[in-house]
Length: 319
Length: 207
Image (tube, rainbow over all chains, first blue to last red; front, top):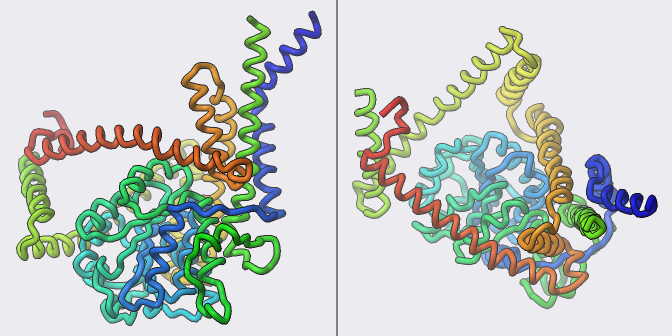
């Protein structure tokens, strides 16, 4: 009788584990893989692949550019920053004109930080290879979005350094969304919808989104309709893009001195080791983060199963 | 007059923007350019208003020594110091402003957001119990999506990421779209009511 009681008590405990123990296990399952990286496989999904292919199609084309819109602050940086650095690295590797803009005061240093991180390894010049439009108040978002459909230099006027946008070399052959044909919005919300409503519906611009994992489900309806041509799904999306850039854009050989074209077979077969020094730390952050996320998810599933086992056995015993 | 003038402005401009969206005429484009200039001129005042409001709220707290007034001092000091650093030395890499961003704001914001992981883990453990058929479906879907999101899911079976994508693409999409259509219809109805002057509660006061 006493033994039976003890068993019920044990299963009851399995249902009511002190949250502090859960916190400790989650913390360790995140910290250890971050400190000790290991190689794991990164599977590239279609929404990320589509963005890569679109950006890569602008390689070396003086008449095309992309716009990166930063609609987030530092809180969502661990997920979004690796995406931003990877996209910038892709553009710099493949000689693609890139513009950046942000709508929150807290995002302005973030844009600088991303640009500084990515440009260290490249011989690129502000106003020639890239241009930061800087911080524009959120209330101006709508007029700027619509205005860029007619004339970018009129809608934005000055860049982050106060220079007249129309006088910059990068603006040669770039007038509106017909030329700056891809907007990638990075946010911890569904802010890409505004781009879809105004830049895509009216001017036919291609829109992609980089969002935190919790916001992915909200953006799915637009991906399915094709209004979003691609999406970075949280840290996983960032890890996938890091791998794509490593395997194709940053690839160097005699046949391909400035990167090689995308191929489904190559990406399936190639494994990029992240434990050595082959890839700089800043370009593999998301993949290291994915290791931590894998372990944390397993631990969460373990706790959920534990709680359910306890629940079922206790209920059976009580019946 | 206090209610009629704002109402006239809203109705007139509302219809003008509707016309601008559908009629690509020169008059319509000129109107939009004029609007752009106005918005650019007016918007900085919103920032000034925000700063004034912040000083007034926290200044009152400090003056009256309301509980936790010390936090208000830190808020105002942070605002003044960051703005001063930005105006004095600029915001480029290597400046005190960027140092503050990289070493204070960035880690603090990321820490706050990271706390979510712990709350979600604890809440998932407590909430995901197969108490009913619906809860069981939710539990199974959650486990599949969680595994599908990490490389380990695909290593276990190809079926896991595929099922995860199906859950996001079919049941999730159906529910999301239903909500969005409802919200869209509601927004259209409310916008029409505002344009026609039927909805006036946003003007404040009674009817």
